[in-house]
Length: 119
Ligand SMILES: [Zn+2]
Image (cartoon, rainbow, N blue to C red; front, top):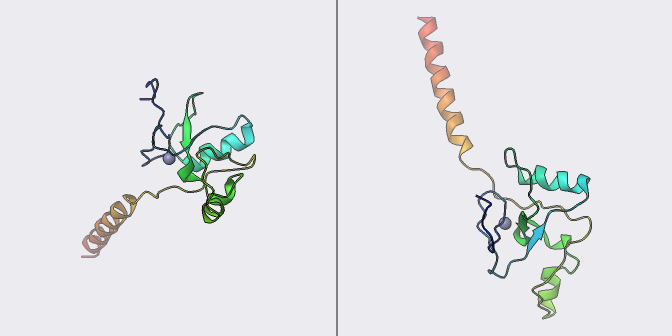
C-alpha cells in the first residue's frame, strides 16, 4: 500500500494527511534512538518505516517545532516550511475507541457461567 509514487501519505493510524494539503510531512529521524521513539508512539503492528515513509505535522505539539506555530500565528508570521527540533518526538495520536465494547461483552459471559456452576 506504500507503493504510490508521487503522492506521499502520513503513516499514522486514522490519519489521512497526504502531500498537497499544506500540512508538512516529515521523514523519520536517522538517529536510531529517536527513530525507535517515533515508531513506538505510532503504535502500528509490525511497522518499519521505509525511506519514503512520512509522518505529518499534526502529530507534534507546537513546542516540538523550531518556530512555535501558535506563537508565529499570533505575530502574523506564516510559513509553510517549519522544521522540527532535533529532539522532537510525535505524541499527538487519535486513540483506538473500539476496544471498550469487547470488554463489556466478555464480562457478561463470565457472569452467566458463574450462575450455572452454582445451581
Ligand atoms: Zn498524520
